[in-house]
Length: 108
Image (tube, rainbow, N blue to C red; front, top):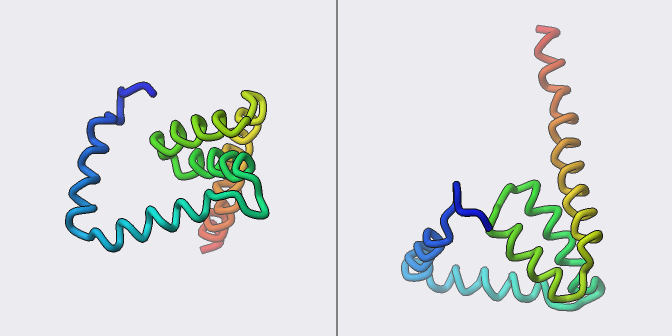
């Protein structure tokens, strides 16, 4: 990952969060592990969903992690690219849907 805007070194700071609230942090880690464990959806499917979602939330750390994890469980470059476009479409769709608020303001 390019480090122009987000330095991986800054991730070390998350340790402070674990120090301050270890039970809550551990709960998140456990939750995350359970969510991404194989279930009705395959691990690959879950990672592809996460790639799309990470593009909506714009988290570069999540993008990198989930692309790497998707590749590790067998996702092809083409599948990953398609997941990226799903995220792009969801983000654009949300902005498009929110245009109704701007159009409502025009009535006032």
